[in-house]
Length: 333
Image 1 (cartoon, one colour):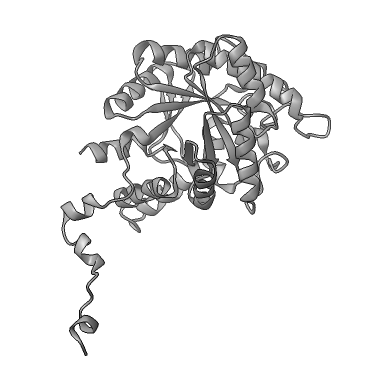
Image 2 (image 1 turned 180 degrees about the horizontal axis):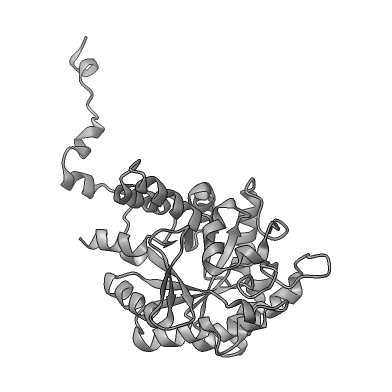
């Protein structure tokens, strides 16, 4: 056996031997500015109400949301995504509370913008927190969600969010043509700098359960589903089609939701469309990690960081995650 046969000239382990070498050749980096923190806001003052299915997550009154926004900003987190917990007495078939200028989300935007102007604010443009049936739109007599009527409502909601101070509108409804309609309305009303983060590939997923508990729409939805507008989990070509349409209509970012089960979709969109992509590490993913950690089956912090890094490796530029605060604290040391 020759020397060349016995000893490899190329030894990949050389670059793994020390911490400085591993850091030097690291391909993906997770940093606080990659993170978007979703928060649930509720009526009241000095209120933090735990979400049982999401350990460590609370529904916050507006004053408490302002405190969290300040902490997130200090940690270097880029922005907050605001999800209102709508009181049942203001829910309706037409979801009119969604565009109430004095609604819970709108008041939250104004309060945070006044107190913490340097953090970005993202709104959820969707009707399910405001409908008595828990669907993301206006329904007909059979319960089918009407596309164009829903889009008109989403435009009104989006304008109210922009006027209240939202920097990014996040249409999460999956109605056809809603990005173009929202973009046209924003431009026509002078909101030319307001971004749109389209939930371009939002799947009809079983991972959303804890979120629906948190915003109070689970009971309204009951045993119904959203398969007539959210995407089939079996499809990836369809995701590319949806994403390309939303870009053409004026979206600035594209969202893939959920995250971990759809890393291939994140990668395809990033590689084929070369545009900013965001992953939503959703409530079910969060709850599974927390439950496994609570049982001592995994190292919570290490698995949390590894999970979020996988989104960056797949091609995500930003990550919505309920782990944002803890992740930023760990990164900052």
